[in-house]
Amino acid sequence: MAATDLYGYDVSLESAAAKESWRNLNLAFLSHGASTADHLGALLKAAPAFAIAEACRGLFSLLLGRRELIATAQEALAKAKEITASHGGDVRTNAYIAALEAYLAGQLAKSAAIFDTLLETHPRDAMAIKLGHAIKFILGDALGMRTSLEAVMPQFRGTNATDGYMHGCYAFALEETGDQRAAEIAGKHALDLVSDDAWGLHAVAHVYDMTARARDGVTWLESRTDAWAHCNNFRYHVYWHLALFYLDTGAHDEVLRLYDMEIRQDKTDDYRDISNAASLLSRLEIEGVDVGARWEELAALSEHRVDDGCAVFADLHYMLSLLGGERKAATEQLLHRMRRDANRNDGDMDRVADHPGLNAASGLVAFRDGNYTNAFANLSAARPAMQTVGGSHAQRDVFERITIEAAIRAGAFEEARTLVDERAAKRGGVDGYTASRGTLLDGLLTTPVAVAS
Image (cartoon, rainbow, N blue to C red; front, side):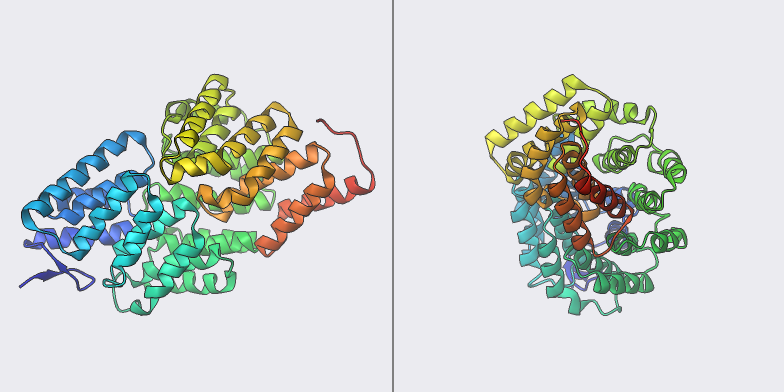
Protein backbone atom coordinates (compact mmCIF):
# COMPACT_ATOMS: atom_id res chain seq x y z
CA MET A 1 0.00 0.00 0.00
CA ALA A 2 1.45 3.38 -1.04
CA ALA A 3 2.24 5.94 1.60
CA THR A 4 0.50 9.30 1.47
CA ASP A 5 1.85 12.69 2.47
CA LEU A 6 0.25 15.59 4.35
CA TYR A 7 -1.63 16.53 1.16
CA GLY A 8 -3.10 13.04 0.84
CA TYR A 9 -1.07 12.16 -2.26
CA ASP A 10 0.91 8.99 -2.83
CA VAL A 11 4.65 9.22 -2.22
CA SER A 12 7.40 6.66 -2.64
CA LEU A 13 8.54 6.90 0.96
CA GLU A 14 8.85 3.86 3.17
CA SER A 15 10.43 4.81 6.48
CA ALA A 16 8.78 6.89 9.18
CA ALA A 17 11.84 9.12 9.21
CA ALA A 18 11.50 9.85 5.49
CA LYS A 19 7.79 10.65 5.78
CA GLU A 20 8.43 12.95 8.74
CA SER A 21 11.28 14.71 6.93
CA TRP A 22 9.08 15.29 3.85
CA ARG A 23 6.35 16.74 6.05
CA ASN A 24 8.81 18.94 7.92
CA LEU A 25 10.42 20.12 4.70
CA ASN A 26 7.08 21.23 3.30
CA LEU A 27 6.07 23.13 6.43
CA ALA A 28 9.47 24.77 6.78
CA PHE A 29 9.59 25.90 3.16
CA LEU A 30 6.05 27.24 3.28
CA SER A 31 6.83 29.23 6.43
CA HIS A 32 10.22 30.49 5.17
CA GLY A 33 11.79 28.59 8.04
CA ALA A 34 15.50 28.63 8.73
CA SER A 35 15.29 24.85 9.17
CA THR A 36 14.36 24.21 5.51
CA ALA A 37 17.86 23.13 4.45
CA ASP A 38 18.20 20.84 7.46
CA HIS A 39 14.95 19.06 6.66
CA LEU A 40 15.93 18.69 3.01
CA GLY A 41 19.24 17.16 4.06
CA ALA A 42 17.47 14.74 6.39
CA LEU A 43 15.04 13.75 3.63
CA LEU A 44 17.79 13.12 1.09
CA LYS A 45 19.56 10.92 3.62
CA ALA A 46 16.44 9.01 4.65
CA ALA A 47 15.09 8.58 1.12
CA PRO A 48 17.92 8.78 -1.43
CA ALA A 49 15.62 7.42 -4.15
CA PHE A 50 12.91 10.09 -3.67
CA ALA A 51 13.18 12.03 -6.93
CA ILE A 52 10.93 14.90 -5.81
CA ALA A 53 13.43 15.71 -3.07
CA GLU A 54 16.19 16.03 -5.67
CA ALA A 55 13.96 18.25 -7.81
CA CYS A 56 13.31 20.43 -4.78
CA ARG A 57 17.04 20.62 -4.10
CA GLY A 58 17.58 21.88 -7.63
CA LEU A 59 14.73 24.37 -7.56
CA PHE A 60 15.70 25.72 -4.15
CA SER A 61 19.23 26.26 -5.50
CA LEU A 62 18.00 28.18 -8.53
CA LEU A 63 15.68 30.37 -6.49
CA LEU A 64 18.74 31.65 -4.60
CA GLY A 65 19.90 33.40 -7.79
CA ARG A 66 23.59 32.47 -7.51
CA ARG A 67 25.50 31.34 -10.57
CA GLU A 68 27.67 28.92 -8.60
CA LEU A 69 24.56 26.99 -7.55
CA ILE A 70 23.55 26.23 -11.13
CA ALA A 71 25.92 23.26 -10.98
CA THR A 72 24.11 22.00 -7.88
CA ALA A 73 20.78 22.28 -9.70
CA GLN A 74 22.18 20.41 -12.71
CA GLU A 75 23.47 17.68 -10.43
CA ALA A 76 20.06 17.42 -8.74
CA LEU A 77 18.32 17.17 -12.12
CA ALA A 78 20.65 14.39 -13.25
CA LYS A 79 20.08 12.51 -9.99
CA ALA A 80 16.30 12.88 -10.22
CA LYS A 81 16.31 11.57 -13.79
CA GLU A 82 18.55 8.68 -12.76
CA ILE A 83 16.10 7.74 -10.00
CA THR A 84 13.07 7.78 -12.30
CA ALA A 85 14.93 5.79 -14.94
CA SER A 86 15.51 3.08 -12.35
CA HIS A 87 12.32 3.27 -10.29
CA GLY A 88 9.83 4.97 -12.57
CA GLY A 89 8.09 8.25 -11.98
CA ASP A 90 4.48 9.28 -11.57
CA VAL A 91 2.78 12.41 -12.90
CA ARG A 92 3.72 14.46 -9.86
CA THR A 93 7.36 13.42 -9.82
CA ASN A 94 7.73 14.01 -13.54
CA ALA A 95 6.23 17.49 -13.21
CA TYR A 96 8.70 18.53 -10.51
CA ILE A 97 11.58 17.29 -12.64
CA ALA A 98 10.26 18.99 -15.79
CA ALA A 99 9.85 22.27 -13.90
CA LEU A 100 13.46 22.08 -12.74
CA GLU A 101 14.66 21.29 -16.24
CA ALA A 102 12.74 24.24 -17.72
CA TYR A 103 14.12 26.61 -15.09
CA LEU A 104 17.67 25.44 -15.80
CA ALA A 105 17.05 26.13 -19.50
CA GLY A 106 16.16 29.73 -18.65
CA GLN A 107 12.47 29.12 -19.27
CA LEU A 108 11.05 30.34 -15.98
CA ALA A 109 7.56 30.98 -17.31
CA LYS A 110 7.42 27.44 -18.64
CA SER A 111 8.61 26.10 -15.28
CA ALA A 112 5.78 27.90 -13.48
CA ALA A 113 3.28 26.72 -16.10
CA ILE A 114 4.31 23.10 -15.49
CA PHE A 115 3.37 23.49 -11.83
CA ASP A 116 0.05 25.05 -12.83
CA THR A 117 -0.68 22.02 -15.00
CA LEU A 118 0.22 19.69 -12.13
CA LEU A 119 -2.33 21.47 -9.93
CA GLU A 120 -5.12 20.36 -12.25
CA THR A 121 -4.64 16.84 -10.88
CA HIS A 122 -2.95 17.67 -7.55
CA PRO A 123 -4.67 20.88 -6.38
CA ARG A 124 -3.69 20.40 -2.72
CA ASP A 125 0.06 20.22 -3.40
CA ALA A 126 1.11 23.32 -1.46
CA MET A 127 4.79 22.76 -2.22
CA ALA A 128 4.06 22.91 -5.96
CA ILE A 129 1.87 25.98 -5.44
CA LYS A 130 4.55 27.77 -3.44
CA LEU A 131 7.28 26.93 -5.96
CA GLY A 132 5.18 28.20 -8.84
CA HIS A 133 4.31 31.29 -6.79
CA ALA A 134 8.01 31.96 -6.14
CA ILE A 135 8.94 31.62 -9.80
CA LYS A 136 6.14 33.96 -10.88
CA PHE A 137 7.28 36.43 -8.24
CA ILE A 138 10.73 36.45 -9.84
CA LEU A 139 9.03 37.16 -13.18
CA GLY A 140 6.80 39.89 -11.74
CA ASP A 141 3.78 37.88 -12.89
CA ALA A 142 1.27 39.11 -10.31
CA LEU A 143 -1.79 38.14 -12.36
CA GLY A 144 -0.36 34.66 -12.86
CA MET A 145 0.14 34.29 -9.11
CA ARG A 146 -3.46 35.24 -8.48
CA THR A 147 -4.96 33.14 -11.27
CA SER A 148 -3.21 29.93 -10.25
CA LEU A 149 -4.16 30.41 -6.59
CA GLU A 150 -7.79 31.17 -7.33
CA ALA A 151 -8.02 27.87 -9.19
CA VAL A 152 -7.10 25.92 -6.05
CA MET A 153 -8.19 28.02 -3.06
CA PRO A 154 -11.43 26.02 -2.56
CA GLN A 155 -9.14 23.15 -1.50
CA PHE A 156 -7.82 25.11 1.50
CA ARG A 157 -10.61 25.52 4.03
CA GLY A 158 -8.54 25.50 7.19
CA THR A 159 -8.51 21.75 7.81
CA ASN A 160 -4.91 21.03 6.75
CA ALA A 161 -1.62 22.15 8.28
CA THR A 162 -0.71 23.95 5.05
CA ASP A 163 -3.94 25.86 4.52
CA GLY A 164 -2.88 29.06 6.28
CA TYR A 165 0.21 29.38 4.12
CA MET A 166 -1.91 29.18 0.97
CA HIS A 167 -4.14 31.98 2.25
CA GLY A 168 -0.96 33.97 2.85
CA CYS A 169 0.14 33.41 -0.74
CA TYR A 170 -3.30 34.41 -1.94
CA ALA A 171 -3.16 37.58 0.17
CA PHE A 172 0.08 38.57 -1.52
CA ALA A 173 -1.31 37.88 -4.99
CA LEU A 174 -4.39 39.96 -4.19
CA GLU A 175 -2.24 42.84 -2.97
CA GLU A 176 0.02 42.77 -6.02
CA THR A 177 -3.02 42.85 -8.33
CA GLY A 178 -4.47 45.85 -6.52
CA ASP A 179 -7.20 44.33 -4.35
CA GLN A 180 -5.91 45.76 -1.09
CA ARG A 181 -9.02 45.24 1.04
CA ALA A 182 -9.33 41.57 0.13
CA ALA A 183 -5.58 41.11 0.59
CA GLU A 184 -5.70 42.45 4.13
CA ILE A 185 -8.57 40.13 5.03
CA ALA A 186 -6.87 37.09 3.47
CA GLY A 187 -3.52 37.84 5.12
CA LYS A 188 -5.01 38.22 8.57
CA HIS A 189 -7.03 35.04 8.05
CA ALA A 190 -3.79 33.24 7.15
CA LEU A 191 -2.27 34.25 10.50
CA ASP A 192 -5.41 33.05 12.28
CA LEU A 193 -4.95 29.64 10.67
CA VAL A 194 -1.21 29.30 11.23
CA SER A 195 0.73 31.61 13.50
CA ASP A 196 4.08 31.41 11.70
CA ASP A 197 2.95 32.40 8.20
CA ALA A 198 5.60 35.04 7.60
CA TRP A 199 4.53 35.45 3.96
CA GLY A 200 0.95 36.23 4.96
CA LEU A 201 2.17 38.62 7.65
CA HIS A 202 4.33 40.34 5.03
CA ALA A 203 1.41 40.49 2.58
CA VAL A 204 -0.53 42.58 5.08
CA ALA A 205 2.55 44.79 5.53
CA HIS A 206 2.45 45.37 1.77
CA VAL A 207 -1.17 46.45 2.08
CA TYR A 208 -0.27 49.01 4.73
CA ASP A 209 2.59 50.26 2.55
CA MET A 210 0.46 50.60 -0.57
CA THR A 211 -2.39 52.32 1.29
CA ALA A 212 -0.11 54.77 3.14
CA ARG A 213 -0.87 53.45 6.63
CA ALA A 214 2.64 53.54 8.02
CA ARG A 215 1.72 53.68 11.70
CA ASP A 216 -0.64 50.72 11.29
CA GLY A 217 2.23 48.91 9.59
CA VAL A 218 4.55 49.53 12.51
CA THR A 219 1.96 48.21 14.96
CA TRP A 220 1.21 45.18 12.78
CA LEU A 221 4.83 44.05 12.53
CA GLU A 222 6.05 44.98 16.00
CA SER A 223 3.15 43.18 17.67
CA ARG A 224 3.72 39.96 15.73
CA THR A 225 7.45 39.31 15.84
CA ASP A 226 6.81 35.67 16.73
CA ALA A 227 5.36 35.17 13.25
CA TRP A 228 8.77 35.73 11.67
CA ALA A 229 11.28 34.95 14.42
CA HIS A 230 11.71 31.44 12.97
CA CYS A 231 12.56 32.69 9.48
CA ASN A 232 15.64 32.34 7.36
CA ASN A 233 16.94 35.57 5.82
CA PHE A 234 13.36 36.47 4.99
CA ARG A 235 13.26 38.04 8.45
CA TYR A 236 15.61 40.74 7.15
CA HIS A 237 13.02 41.56 4.53
CA VAL A 238 10.31 41.90 7.17
CA TYR A 239 12.57 44.29 9.07
CA TRP A 240 13.00 46.16 5.77
CA HIS A 241 9.24 46.66 5.66
CA LEU A 242 9.31 47.94 9.22
CA ALA A 243 12.07 50.37 8.24
CA LEU A 244 9.98 51.61 5.30
CA PHE A 245 7.14 52.45 7.66
CA TYR A 246 9.49 54.40 9.91
CA LEU A 247 10.95 56.14 6.86
CA ASP A 248 7.50 57.32 5.86
CA THR A 249 7.02 58.87 9.29
CA GLY A 250 10.37 60.65 9.07
CA ALA A 251 12.01 58.60 11.85
CA HIS A 252 15.36 58.40 10.06
CA ASP A 253 17.38 57.49 13.15
CA GLU A 254 15.17 54.44 13.70
CA VAL A 255 15.54 53.47 10.05
CA LEU A 256 19.32 53.54 10.37
CA ARG A 257 19.16 51.59 13.62
CA LEU A 258 17.08 48.88 11.96
CA TYR A 259 19.48 48.86 9.02
CA ASP A 260 22.52 48.30 11.23
CA MET A 261 21.05 46.01 13.88
CA GLU A 262 18.63 43.89 11.84
CA ILE A 263 18.61 44.32 8.06
CA ARG A 264 22.40 44.08 7.76
CA GLN A 265 22.98 42.24 11.01
CA ASP A 266 24.60 39.48 8.96
CA LYS A 267 26.76 40.73 6.10
CA THR A 268 25.43 38.24 3.57
CA ASP A 269 25.72 38.51 -0.19
CA ASP A 270 22.32 36.95 -0.85
CA TYR A 271 20.82 39.15 -3.55
CA ARG A 272 17.58 39.56 -1.61
CA ASP A 273 19.48 40.87 1.41
CA ILE A 274 21.54 43.23 -0.72
CA SER A 275 18.33 44.39 -2.41
CA ASN A 276 16.77 45.24 0.95
CA ALA A 277 19.82 47.25 1.92
CA ALA A 278 20.54 49.02 -1.37
CA SER A 279 16.96 50.11 -1.90
CA LEU A 280 16.71 51.41 1.66
CA LEU A 281 19.95 53.39 1.44
CA SER A 282 18.76 54.84 -1.88
CA ARG A 283 15.49 55.97 -0.32
CA LEU A 284 17.35 57.53 2.59
CA GLU A 285 19.68 59.45 0.29
CA ILE A 286 16.73 60.70 -1.74
CA GLU A 287 15.42 62.15 1.51
CA GLY A 288 18.74 63.88 2.10
CA VAL A 289 19.96 61.52 4.83
CA ASP A 290 23.72 60.96 5.08
CA VAL A 291 24.18 57.17 5.14
CA GLY A 292 27.89 57.39 5.90
CA ALA A 293 30.08 54.51 4.73
CA ARG A 294 27.26 51.96 4.52
CA TRP A 295 27.49 51.66 0.73
CA GLU A 296 31.04 50.34 1.00
CA GLU A 297 30.06 46.95 2.40
CA LEU A 298 27.34 46.43 -0.23
CA ALA A 299 29.61 47.49 -3.07
CA ALA A 300 32.38 45.13 -1.97
CA LEU A 301 29.95 42.21 -1.97
CA SER A 302 28.25 43.20 -5.22
CA GLU A 303 31.59 43.33 -7.06
CA HIS A 304 31.69 39.55 -6.77
CA ARG A 305 28.16 39.06 -8.13
CA VAL A 306 28.30 41.07 -11.37
CA ASP A 307 28.66 37.94 -13.52
CA ASP A 308 25.71 36.06 -11.99
CA GLY A 309 23.05 36.98 -14.53
CA CYS A 310 20.40 34.97 -12.68
CA ALA A 311 17.86 37.75 -12.13
CA VAL A 312 17.64 41.28 -13.50
CA PHE A 313 16.08 42.37 -10.20
CA ALA A 314 19.33 41.34 -8.52
CA ASP A 315 21.45 43.05 -11.17
CA LEU A 316 19.73 46.39 -10.66
CA HIS A 317 20.31 46.27 -6.91
CA TYR A 318 23.92 45.27 -7.43
CA MET A 319 24.11 48.31 -9.67
CA LEU A 320 22.72 50.57 -6.94
CA SER A 321 25.33 49.18 -4.56
CA LEU A 322 28.24 49.56 -6.96
CA LEU A 323 27.25 53.13 -7.78
CA GLY A 324 26.84 53.96 -4.11
CA GLY A 325 30.30 52.59 -3.42
CA GLU A 326 31.80 54.25 -6.51
CA ARG A 327 32.98 50.99 -8.10
CA LYS A 328 33.32 52.28 -11.66
CA ALA A 329 35.10 49.26 -13.13
CA ALA A 330 32.56 46.83 -11.66
CA THR A 331 29.72 49.06 -12.85
CA GLU A 332 31.01 48.84 -16.42
CA GLN A 333 31.50 45.10 -16.05
CA LEU A 334 27.90 44.66 -14.95
CA LEU A 335 26.57 46.76 -17.82
CA HIS A 336 28.70 44.78 -20.28
CA ARG A 337 27.41 41.48 -18.93
CA MET A 338 23.80 42.65 -19.15
CA ARG A 339 24.37 43.68 -22.79
CA ARG A 340 25.88 40.27 -23.49
CA ASP A 341 22.88 38.54 -21.93
CA ALA A 342 20.47 40.72 -23.89
CA ASN A 343 22.25 39.96 -27.17
CA ARG A 344 22.23 36.24 -26.39
CA ASN A 345 18.43 36.33 -26.00
CA ASP A 346 18.37 32.73 -24.78
CA GLY A 347 15.82 32.68 -21.99
CA ASP A 348 13.35 34.75 -20.03
CA MET A 349 15.98 36.69 -18.06
CA ASP A 350 17.93 37.55 -21.20
CA ARG A 351 14.82 39.19 -22.64
CA VAL A 352 14.25 41.13 -19.43
CA ALA A 353 17.90 42.21 -19.47
CA ASP A 354 17.32 43.60 -22.96
CA HIS A 355 14.20 45.49 -21.88
CA PRO A 356 13.72 47.03 -19.42
CA GLY A 357 16.97 45.98 -17.73
CA LEU A 358 19.52 47.86 -19.80
CA ASN A 359 17.53 51.08 -19.84
CA ALA A 360 17.02 50.91 -16.09
CA ALA A 361 20.68 50.17 -15.39
CA SER A 362 21.86 52.95 -17.72
CA GLY A 363 19.42 55.33 -16.06
CA LEU A 364 20.79 54.51 -12.62
CA VAL A 365 24.34 55.17 -13.81
CA ALA A 366 23.35 58.50 -15.34
CA PHE A 367 21.49 59.51 -12.19
CA ARG A 368 24.52 58.86 -9.98
CA ASP A 369 26.69 60.77 -12.49
CA GLY A 370 24.39 63.78 -12.23
CA ASN A 371 23.22 63.50 -15.86
CA TYR A 372 19.57 63.81 -14.93
CA THR A 373 18.19 64.37 -18.42
CA ASN A 374 19.75 61.13 -19.62
CA ALA A 375 18.72 59.37 -16.42
CA PHE A 376 15.11 60.42 -16.84
CA ALA A 377 15.07 59.38 -20.50
CA ASN A 378 16.41 55.91 -19.74
CA LEU A 379 14.34 55.30 -16.62
CA SER A 380 11.21 56.52 -18.41
CA ALA A 381 11.90 54.10 -21.26
CA ALA A 382 12.24 51.26 -18.76
CA ARG A 383 9.26 52.24 -16.61
CA PRO A 384 6.35 50.65 -18.56
CA ALA A 385 7.99 47.21 -18.37
CA MET A 386 9.59 47.41 -14.93
CA GLN A 387 7.20 44.86 -13.44
CA THR A 388 8.94 42.19 -15.51
CA VAL A 389 12.17 42.57 -13.51
CA GLY A 390 10.33 40.82 -10.69
CA GLY A 391 9.82 41.61 -7.05
CA SER A 392 6.88 43.51 -5.62
CA HIS A 393 5.39 46.95 -6.12
CA ALA A 394 7.00 48.02 -2.84
CA GLN A 395 10.42 46.75 -3.91
CA ARG A 396 10.29 48.33 -7.37
CA ASP A 397 9.17 51.63 -5.87
CA VAL A 398 12.81 52.62 -5.38
CA PHE A 399 13.13 52.85 -9.17
CA GLU A 400 9.92 54.86 -9.36
CA ARG A 401 11.30 57.31 -6.80
CA ILE A 402 14.60 57.65 -8.65
CA THR A 403 12.70 58.27 -11.90
CA ILE A 404 10.70 61.04 -10.24
CA GLU A 405 13.85 62.55 -8.73
CA ALA A 406 15.56 62.46 -12.13
CA ALA A 407 12.60 64.27 -13.70
CA ILE A 408 12.63 66.96 -11.03
CA ARG A 409 16.39 67.51 -11.26
CA ALA A 410 16.20 67.58 -15.06
CA GLY A 411 13.57 70.31 -14.88
CA ALA A 412 10.81 68.10 -16.30
CA PHE A 413 8.33 69.30 -13.71
CA GLU A 414 5.13 68.51 -15.62
CA GLU A 415 6.33 64.99 -16.26
CA ALA A 416 7.36 64.61 -12.63
CA ARG A 417 3.94 65.80 -11.47
CA THR A 418 2.30 63.18 -13.70
CA LEU A 419 4.53 60.46 -12.26
CA VAL A 420 3.74 61.50 -8.68
CA ASP A 421 0.00 61.49 -9.41
CA GLU A 422 0.20 58.09 -11.12
CA ARG A 423 2.15 56.68 -8.20
CA ALA A 424 -0.46 57.92 -5.72
CA ALA A 425 -3.32 56.48 -7.79
CA LYS A 426 -1.61 53.12 -8.12
CA ARG A 427 -0.84 52.89 -4.43
CA GLY A 428 -4.27 53.87 -3.20
CA GLY A 429 -3.01 56.43 -0.71
CA VAL A 430 -0.85 59.51 -0.25
CA ASP A 431 2.29 58.55 1.65
CA GLY A 432 5.04 60.83 2.89
CA TYR A 433 7.00 60.69 -0.35
CA THR A 434 4.00 61.55 -2.53
CA ALA A 435 3.00 64.39 -0.23
CA SER A 436 6.47 65.96 -0.11
CA ARG A 437 7.12 65.72 -3.84
CA GLY A 438 3.64 66.95 -4.64
CA THR A 439 4.19 70.05 -2.52
CA LEU A 440 7.63 70.60 -4.06
CA LEU A 441 6.28 70.32 -7.59
CA ASP A 442 3.34 72.61 -6.90
CA GLY A 443 5.89 75.28 -6.04
CA LEU A 444 8.18 74.53 -8.97
CA LEU A 445 5.34 74.57 -11.47
CA THR A 446 4.24 78.03 -10.34
CA THR A 447 7.73 79.47 -9.88
CA PRO A 448 10.26 77.62 -12.08
CA VAL A 449 13.84 77.59 -10.84
CA ALA A 450 17.12 76.64 -12.47
CA VAL A 451 18.12 73.01 -11.93
CA ALA A 452 21.07 70.85 -12.86
CA SER A 453 20.88 69.16 -16.24
